[in-house]
Image: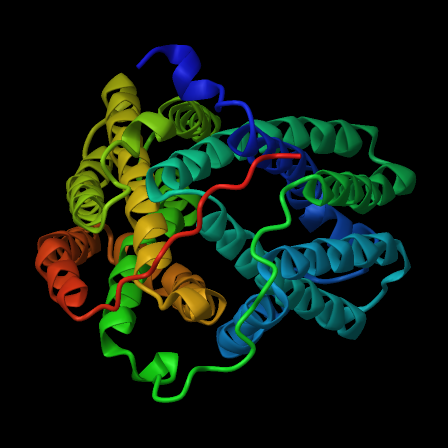
Amino acid sequence: MGVRENLVPPAGLPRAYALVSLIFGIGIGTFSTGSAVFFTAVVGLEAHEIGIGLSAAAGAVLVCSVPLGRIADRFGPRRAWTFGVAGSAVGFLLWPFAHGFFTFLAMIVFFELLNAVGMAGRNVYLIEAVDPETRVRTQAFSRSWLNVGWSAGSGLAALALAIDTRWAYLALPLTNAVVLLANLALIARLPAGPARRVRQRPAGQRHVFADRHFLAVTVLCAVLIAYATIELQVAPLWLLTHTDAPKWWIGVLTLINTVMATTLQVAMTRGAHTIGGAARALRLGGLAAALGCPVFYLAGATSGAVTLVVFVLATVLFTLSEMWQSAGSWTLAAELPPKERRGEYFGAFRMGTSAMEMIGPASLIALAVTTGGWGWFLIGGVFLTAALTAVPLVDWVARHRRPAATAKAPALT
């Protein structure tokens, strides 16, 4: 597979879907990169208030993911996707008028709930639109183009922060609002998808929380997605507090991660479109992270250029873990649920991610950083256990699943 095949999706739905991700990435990258400054300088918050609000929003999503996911089942995935994006666009237009903690709290919870609806709709739409192999490759292209857009948005945010005026800060949410409105136009051009939706759970089917097989996979993927907390929070703190690496090396490591995720994600999905292939991808992701943990620990025992190289090696391992975990979880979240309840099941699957976002930072930082480093081996042991469990667990789940039919791909209009 050539470089072009790894970077440019095929014409039609895959390319249109990737373009939506690229533009979305520009907007969210612009706002997210400058959000801390916006919240403090414009909304008037203290740092701890931002943290409380973000935790509350994650908790709201954790509680509401399943009923919000059902919206995609009841009204159709593209309608849910459109509703989530349109609501977010309106919300970003209102950010310049926000002031104080309680306004911030209400808006940040509002955004996360809308995002949950939009994500459920977007994911169910793609599941129903294309065959499994095309779907996984399309998600990989989407992730790659999202990274490109995020990088461009980060550059715009850096410009606003350099200008350092109130009007420059107000441009952050307004830019994202404009981008989301542009996304609505692109989403409207996508095929409508299946018109008929199942509005109620068919008689005799269990609630998703009674489906212990699917919940087991959800827990497995939630454990493996801890790679994100390691990359974004734990590793930078470890670098700053326990190594002699310069602060700016964090930027180099972020660049390495971005370049790898942009150029290699499609290639890393090969074979992951089947349930067995997805299980093997999760196993590889867990093994890569398990190897990366002691390498991060080693960075605390080295000095000079060796430390820098060790950090690069650990970053490469965790980026590989990220790409394998993503490929495997995409397939399992799509193929295991009953076809008429994919939104509901996606909501339950997202609960695992929300739970990790709530408990991961504090627990993993405590283990890796505040222990002086020996906690890296415990974290690595958790990843190793998940890796060794992945294939037999998914095999067990697959034996008890009901086959989920996938709709044929509609033509892009």
